[in-house]
Image 1 (tube, rainbow, N blue to C red):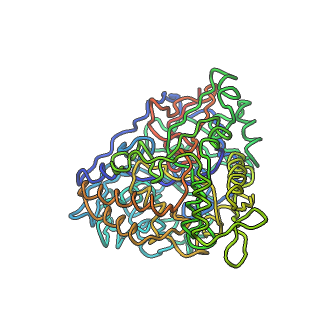
Image 2 (image 1 turned 180 degrees about the horizontal axis):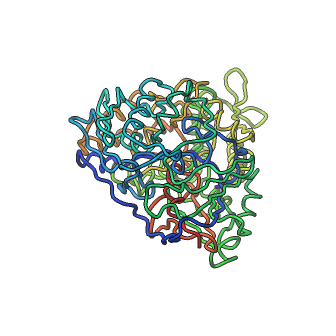
Image 3 (image 1 turned 60 degrees about the vertical axis):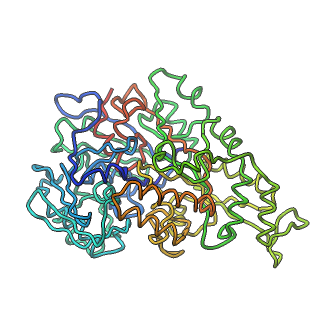
Length: 557
């Protein structure tokens, strides 16, 4: 899918809680070496159908540009989304938990500089985290931070109001460290455009136009021999068709497009063309669980019973979209927490009879027009919003539209500009969306992001955390909290089992299948990219901050 997706990641809970101290090693990449004279060449990349580029590189902004998170601004550590438990040193060399998980101390690299030449120190790290403490709007992950203190130029301690074991990825892998000497004068960090970002990353802003964004290698980057490519050039397109044409013609060196019949249309055109597809997420019909028809569980169940997942996979993805389980659990990544009693659960064939019975039990009756109506005579009508140009998602909705008509549910498909769609998603201004979630090796972060009602604001308030449908079950919230408060793996598993049982019963979202994550590389121009056999990082161009880790390890072919 050629989409600018939102990535939600975390470290394996078991890996986090295995001990109180962790050391981060060097990169796991086996990519080829760069030029002895420094970075060279240009790699052309695309996130596909997206809004025109603007000079907004603020990591707090919902409109932050591609490359800002990971390529320009960096976190303390790299957590490999493609391989659970693979942790690498980024700005921090190691960490140590305090007693009971209520504090953590990071030991930082020395000799790191911001791209304006100023030294990077623990003061910058403390400043960044204290922004979250002083401004709850910036603390999008709901971290229980109370204060951050620099102990020395290379040591910083974070204190929490409760154990924060399961927040390590958000702390060390999702928080981009900011330069205090720049941001201390910013009056509103949330709205600051940050057109000339000062980061520690391997890349700096070159030029920005509506259709082209150039990032250029940081000549003083601190990791020896990195980056290897001088310029990463991003292009944006108005839709999948034009983007696919650019990928198939060889104009794009690193892309993430859904190309129909990719074996024939792309791979067989040129032996140098390569596609990597590492399972990372689940595609959903994301329902609004607070307002409208889908706030009724019976309606969600009826939709799920009616959708023909196999037909969608065959028609849209050439059969290359495996089913997911009804617990919405991303497997096999999360098999370690799968309730053994639910291991055989799967979606069966569509059952329109049962779907109609569910709607009848919810008070809907069939009308002469072929649609279900409530007691007041109002038609059971649902609007699905899809970004303009997302051809595969539009195709999914057209199939769903016809399938749901058979049980009396009227579906209206509305396409809108990508940024408008993002705003509607974040504010809960929708009835149904198609989207994908996952991009994490941690089941806690996966479920917490998708279902934690305690972290989702009311309809109309921007939520960048992930529970866009505003599902709110106090039982699930309590179980997630139990997992985060203990280092007992067995106790965590029992809580996961209960969550899975509740999801099976309540249908908070409607999972369809494992998401398509086809990433194309043009071997004529680029080498050293992640592969299934050498998954040193997740390869999607839109997955931040992984894209920064990949970008610095790519080489011109």
